[in-house]
Image (cartoon, rainbow, N blue to C red; front, side):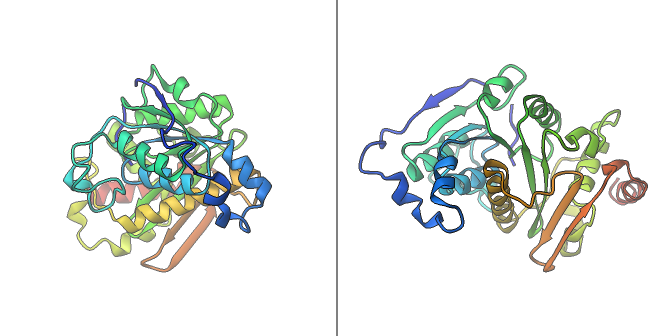
Length: 300
């Protein structure tokens, strides 16, 4: 996930028409999707906010699934501290714009892709352009970017766009799917009226009520929500992208089973555990409120 904040670019690859064949490139998907479904994916547009830890690998994963159009946004540049988890980060991309680097990777997978880039990130001024014609939104915002995240999820609901958030937690991932006719992002997380720090705790608690990741955190001093920092792994990012890819098949092709919010899902590869449960009141439940008090007492 990457912090975002606006100009729009619409680009097609100069490699298009150079012998590339969409059908051949994605033929090995057939079997898990039908030939007809693959052609449907070719016509779908996915918006991804953030091209860092999870956003970049989301883009590559979905491009390899044959999604034919993307709207991608990020204002940040790659730094050496991104090397441990961000697919676009290496010595050759240091200080290069994340959105440009990842756009090139997507075009090198599918030269025919319809790609809109937003190098200033997602802002109040361009959010509608970012979501124009979009069939699915994928949350790749940095964990601590809650204000714009809330606005984008709210706008997706107004526009009837399904939205997915998958957070890398330790060596696992916690994910939620929000559909226009299901529980809203705000009703699930209950951010209203809370200060920024409390919102961070609510976001973490709502993503992973089961807390599977806590057992593999060997140095808790590295997690400090007050200072807006925390550890991460490439394993978690890769797992998050796999989850998003599977949800994309369900949402874009209308295939089930789909368990949107208030269902939450958490898989931890290190612990070898998977929890999927329904939380009808989201963070408003009595048990969630008790957990919130406990973790805030531990970390504040």
